[in-house]
Image (tube, rainbow over all chains, first blue to last red; front, side, top):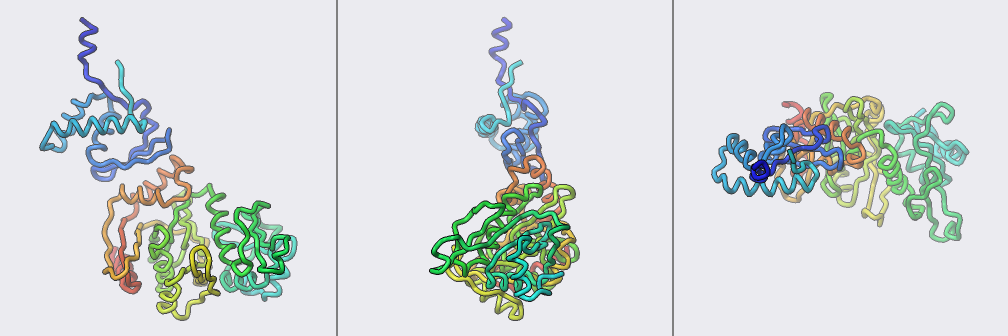
Length: 102
Length: 305
């Protein structure tokens, strides 16, 4: 029963080490410096909102979509989820976030 | 003592000696030794107002030698080498191109060794005690614009390097001669006929180059740091109207970082320095084709901001 419950939990994502990311926000956009890789990334409004939320606590794409939808009142929520899936993949590839296991 | 207070013979006597001359340029002291009298003469013209230090009182940042390679080309199409601390980072140049070789070599020394500063590829000027940083790629008109501003009431801090002090985020001046290239030499001569431009060097890797001597006041104030206030990315575009367009800060930071010599090496310090700088500055793109019009826009900005 427990195993089934765990399997049905949506995948969450988190920032493994908060101190590794330096984030500077200007308006809705931000610049993030990843001190492990030494790389600097520019984030648009959705990217900024998503990374800041993931940095706060482990979060699933669905929860992220709800959070951003509340902020920006996105016209097409389905499209937002697809955008977030791509964004999460990119964040993971850049080493900014990792899958979270409870 | 200033370089200009010595005759060419006196200077040559010094540059052939063991201790050479110690040029004090911005935050750097450069020990230079050479036997090339023509080069010494041009150096004197271009660095006329810079002071000479004393070998026994000065910590030397760069030990530079400019000597002919010991081969048969001493007599046929003679060449000259640039060496620093016994290293030869470049192939020899024609001896007639000793000045551009020295200037590029000096750039190389700074970019390679001055890692205690954040180094941006940018010109810097100042008006009303507020500095404007002009970062740009080659061919953007940066040097011509900086040269023109420096002859119309703006204090000249630098043409090539914006040297940021990590301790306080202020800009350390290094008002070296400005290398004007190709058409920009005549453009500047038309703009400021009395300004001193040294001999023209043709067929260099950047075409024809003439070095503009920095205004004496810029050299006098080379120990007074600048406070960043504007970041303006200039872009010369023929036949365009002058257009100063406000720029998003995050985009400006990415452009600045891509213009830096050692942003990656500076790591977190570099990021914090740049974000602080961008935070305090207003950022613009400047498209221009007419120098007078561009200067007028920048004067209006400086007087009203």
